[in-house]
Length: 393
Image 1 (cartoon, rainbow, N blue to C red):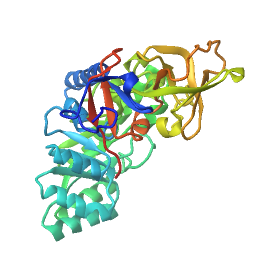
Image 2 (cartoon, one colour):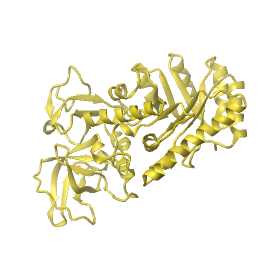
Image 3 (cartoon, rainbow, N blue to C red):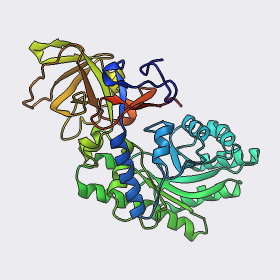
Image 4 (cartoon, rainbow, N blue to C red):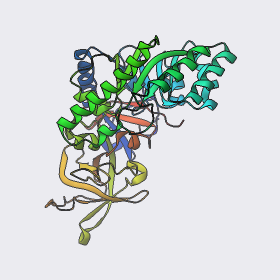
């Protein structure tokens, strides 16, 4: 079985090069990934908090094992499919960091009966009632965190709404569930454009959960977990006093959005899409490749940043960036490579069949298009192995 068609590392693997792969396909630079992983592990240790990596970006057991502190976790997931897959791989300490829907509680219970310490999150009394009822019905007390709104980005209870916080916690405890503490996600940090603003976002995130926890603790409610998390704030937090853990996900691979924010450099981006030149429109200064929006995703996250990279930034086969050459536009299976508008970039003379790598806007969205990573090391064109990847809910 050829590497291009295999979904598993190991016995089916036969060494190949990037020239042998069917395109488009997903490449993962193990050297860059490991460097990114060690960078955040070091920050967590320096800030005296546990690191609970968010596995939603990678959705891959081999990557998870490199990212977690131990083979059993801790870990964060965004779907119950992820929770089940990582539980099957031996991960037992899991936070399901999306507000719980009552219809998913039976699956949560099933996971916990497998000795998986799965914690859920919520931000309403209605959810707390459902969790308490499910706990009583099943005889399986379900642990939960209250989600705190630290910046108006998405969900959560305002940190100073002590009455609502206490009602939710009381409903959980009185109903037979387990209240474990509070968590938040500084989603607005993705819109920051300066280091000063990122530091401010990290401190606002910290203060939100610490203040919420203080209201609860003053009323006698336990808060054993006080959790913060976003890739930008994880890298720019200066002080996490009062916090027990940090969460982040896209830091494993990084992407052009993170580079645009200033969290990483473009050289830190470990994920790319391998594509093949399939045509030219020379009068328009276009190169046509076989990686369209199905391969790159429709995410246009750099459009609002200082530099817009279209659907991705072009690199040569060894991973060296071709300055100002981007995927300017995309159809379902066609990518249009051209100079970035406003630049003086020249068009390389590429033959039909030549191969390129494209750095993605958003690693999570691009990765979701694939079921495997072809793992390379640095600028080597040899494929080391395959890491399986899964998707769905």
